[in-house]
Image (cartoon, rainbow, N blue to C red; front, side, top):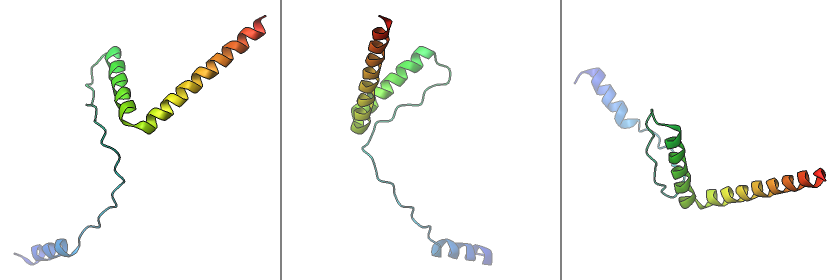
Length: 89
């Protein structure tokens, strides 16, 4: 070995890279395959529904927030409809 190769080898042995702290691991969620480039609108919507269904099934916190927001939107729509009909008379 030459002198420069020797110093490079020594540097790699002595300078160990600092281990990055690992992020807390979530539950293993099955990954959805990346979609192809040239697909139609209907197929994209179907893939999105399947992805959401999978996430609702596996991520309980997301499912809880999702259905609470859905219920809130429904309640607000009903209140707006009643208000509109009440003022119409």
